[in-house]
Image (tube, rainbow, N blue to C red; front, side):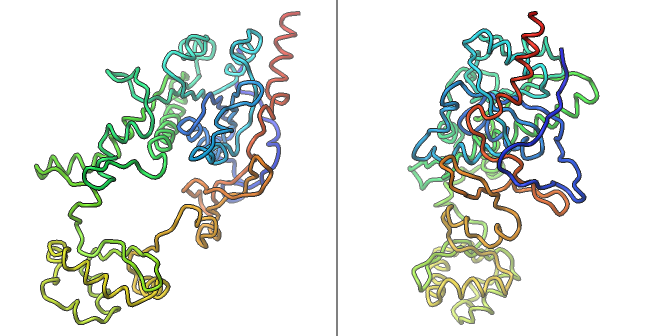
Length: 405
């Protein structure tokens, strides 16, 4: 059995950006990850590890490759969002020679990621037991709908677990459960998988052995609603859905502006209330009924319409200038694609340059972390299907041929 191999050149398309000052190596440099995944949860996990410097080898079926590349509608952005800094190889798990090459690839790996149905890879000899027998240092992450228990063989989707956990109940208006506007559980489930891998790498330093890890979609959704669960436990009252719930703060809402825009403004402390009153200079806000945050929260039914009538006198730019000058929490209501031109993201390294599959340049949000003065950047552009077959599979196939002779 061979150990991790020399990772070689970085390849096509991405700028060479060190992660830390003085060109220090990326945190996971030298770690090889084999990714068997599609859609969002597994690719998100692989993306985190890849951005942190691991060599992530995405295994795709021969021909067109991962079907995620060809999704449409709300799935159109999945592949370009989660595939930077990865390498692509094509292997057919139904072909005996390819299957043996794949096992040899895993022999060189530190980590395997998979998010397929329970038992699917085991049937091909690619489960944890079989692969760890060949490579005892292997860390093997299964990203699943449910962790072991009564539900573990159910088919789960992000929307399913949002309904099942109560997240959709808390998001929509009463009687109208509504999923979040992004695949939050898939993405966070992948992030928790990456966290588990980082922990397992540290344990392997001490024990010399890998282990089988799991990350669950439903369990992630349960974690997201833990604050609502504990609110109910502590108060004995069922929290109402967010659109209809009693807010802890008097002014904490979305308001219309004179120029037809919308802006969220929060006033969450007594000092902020005094600043808010001073900035607007409206006598109606001097009412003693609104003297404390508790008073304001109890009287939101009258306070919010009043504040709305006062803010509607101003355009959104004026209110933004006022809030920024006064240190009040605020944001105009943006659409996701507005972020392409967000001045903060553009100036801070929060948007990374990639090339879309059709050849057009584009940007994508970076991971929301920073090492010293540096953000994690792009080393490899989105891979073409099988782009790295010769680099990665060529030596393994030659080794197999030499062994057979």
